[in-house]
Image 1 (cartoon, one colour):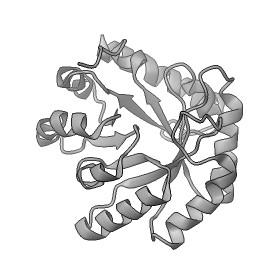
Image 2: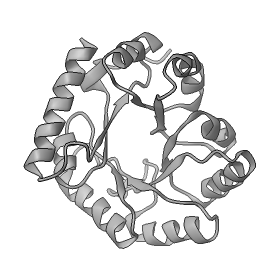
Image 3: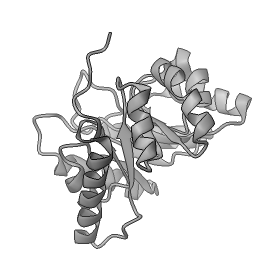
Image 4: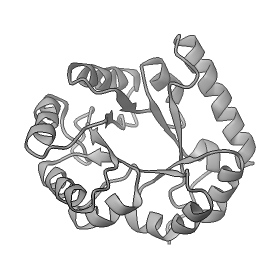
Length: 222
């Protein structure tokens, strides 16, 4: 089932990119395997998928070392909130972190990157809907925070990420993220999930985060 679902998502991505006049290799599919067992990731690996997303540092640390041993080209992205006390483990475990959203975290990442000499690709999370319960820097503070990351903490910011409010039409949020990226010279946009990734691709997404459409409904967390 996972192989067929991956084929379907890839086909839809190719069609969306073609409609947008974009190259077929201009966007990356992140298969979001959070709460799914390692066996599901093995199935996806067998189907040629190499880029995966996880929400929690501890879950990734338990799930991926053995998989990396057999698939050294596996590319792992943290797409969930990152606590500062997990920065050391996150930098060691992930190839990309999509949820940089506050000065304290930026400082901790800078210190750990300097210490370990391992540099994951970094995305600033923007709370495009200004939702009080959601992580992410507010849109009107994004430029200043990106500048602080670059100048104060000497971090290279590779991309921006957003999660639009569930009840909102997503396109304006994706467009807003693209505007912030453009004026800050940022090339990567992590936006779009199972329900709206085609819209995100039409608006410039370079990374789409698809979970349930590949792996099915998430099993309950123990």
